[in-house]
Length: 173
Image 1 (cartoon, rainbow, N blue to C red):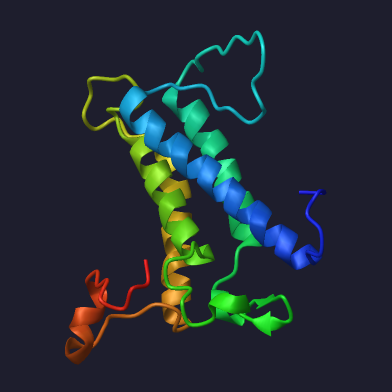
Image 2: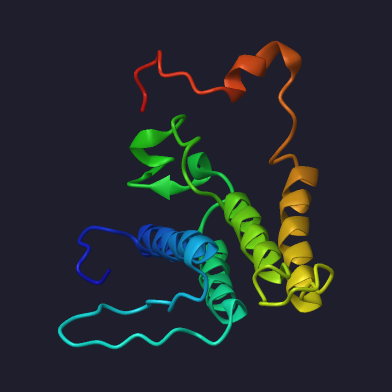
């Protein structure tokens, strides 16, 4: 990040926030399918030995740490961020696909809720949820609801229902 030239501290923070999000997101996808996967948070070169964590929860909590870091650095609205001297930078009005603070809260809650499941903690008792992780998931999901209460999120009116479906007719990927 220090090699970035002509970038403001805010722009660097946003890049770092996106990096934390994607590292957490991809690890959460990996552990959903492969279970207790080592959390890789450094460059691996030459000889390396990665030991599997003892529990799924251990990796899920490492993922949660990166989601927390991303939340602290990412914006609620991309169009409001000043990039390159203008709001939203060169992508103003086309920032709908970017990762936001609210989306990270939602992914954080999902990661914690999956980790709380008895299927992920190695028990055969289907009612043995990890209460600590459930409570952490509640906090994450409640932060999404707080943003909704502030008007950040809402239901799409019926007359605009087509906006919720993918449409590539504009040529915007």
